[in-house]
View 1 (cartoon, helix red, strand yellow):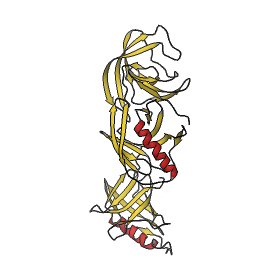
View 2: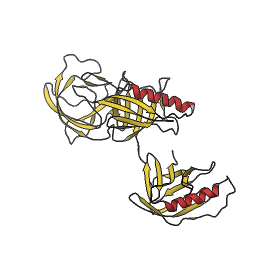
View 3: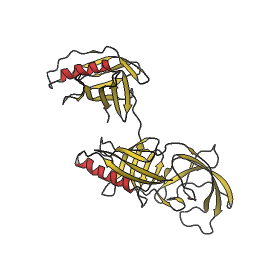
View 4: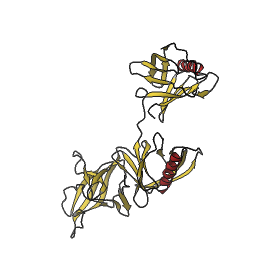
Length: 348
């Protein structure tokens, strides 16, 4: 995919490129009300462009609007009611509206839609060293979370954290620390580009439900989608660790797999490593209890430790009293808070 220049932020506000977006009907020299939506939309004219969504009454549907509104600093994640002055140009440049729109007043600005800090953003594409927008390395976890004055997330192999300053849609990110793990060459190359683009980001926009970071030249360098947190019932969960009954959680025996799936009828089933199991469970808010689990009765000769691991897992289910899902991981804990088993979505 070729890199996309979506918008440029300059002194008076946002300039949107291209001319396939519609302008609202206008009366020259008049003050009129415009409602501006919380996210932008892609369009196509002479080339790709990004458009505001605008309507002229609260009841109307949004349509795309390519003209800049002078003096208006648009920030995604808000719905605006504006008073603008509309004047007609004496000479209309090619691919430009015959009208000039100038902000007179921001009547209201209300939180709406998805905002920068309202979700965890999972990266989908990044600008590679070859100058193309490449998809995220398969099964890698690269994400960004913005809080008041701070950023954090996963760059792929390593966690990172840092600071952020915002001025309208202008952005400045300064990663200040990270872990020091190593990954595959492909993963580390992606991580290097990701962290570089974070530091070089100078503006952002949200197009539909896609977050885009742009560098100082107005080039899109990173794209994200909002994270959809898994639910207990929506996933097949794969165990990454099981309490061994000796005071700790151990990784699974190499070559084995433990899975669990919750059904909305109160039944649970899966594989305990060697055998399949099924039984009942009950949840109430963050509490969980498992009934006796029935299962097949195979004896597996290997890998070494598989039967001991299976026994420990079934005991861990019996001990579990609290469940929690955080960042795609399911944790089961006993009443004292001790971790009994940890899972990730099998699709990850």
